[in-house]
Image (cartoon, rainbow, N blue to C red):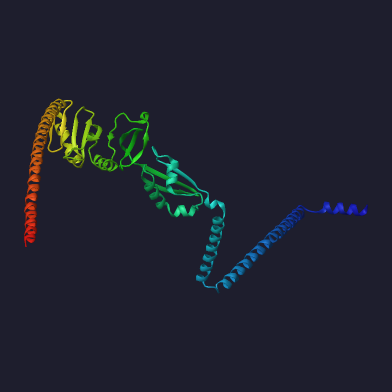
Length: 375
């Protein structure tokens, strides 16, 4: 109890300055303790950063050591080694693909066809199921040329490749110039002069050129000449018929849609036929323009009258020739009879002369014999 009383007395004895001093000391102690804690935490944080820096330094040193070790090999050799490894890897992959069945699986499409069948174009390409994709890829131009030569419809072909195994054959066809009339129907004649195939009457255009020619060489020549004509002239042609004469073996009779007819040699078609456009205005319907020798116009009626006259003249000439032949035959008969009579007389004279010659011979023999007997 005495101690407690003394302490209480001491507390009561402290002055105000002492009290402030004690508070100051207490604050300072608390600040010092907080500073120590902060320093401890900062030290703890700094320690791992230092470790990281040390690790980075070690990694850099290792890299430097590796670079130093690799720097002993020249760069050119390093590049060469990398190239060899890369090329070897590509060869391995390619060889594996080449051995696999995927190397022959191709998808072939055809575009641009109107009259030609896509399957016929594929067959004309010569591509087989056993051909490798690499072979077709390396021979695209060759395949295109094969299609152009093999299929009569194809004028131009182009082969393109799409990864991984698709090939497309783009086709440009020959246009149809005319149709050849046959017993089985109409055959399409292409710009190349070759026959495309039979066409049904339902598929024929409204206006077209009909050829009544059986000679394939003549058709090819005619198509070449037609390709050089103006479109206005070609569109007016309806029927072309080969009508040879003694003077002109390649004479064509051309029937036009405007009702007129032209006769012109095939060899002079491109030279003379364009003149029709100049004289067309002055012609009436049903006119025949004859260009075999020169250029003159006539009508079917005039030609019919001429043909009748020529037929009459031919009959007169025939009658004359028949009368001449009959007179000639009668004269020949008379001459033959006279020759027979003369021949008979000749034979008689010959026989009598023979007898005359033999008689004196016999007389001579007799006289010779009588003279011997007398002697």
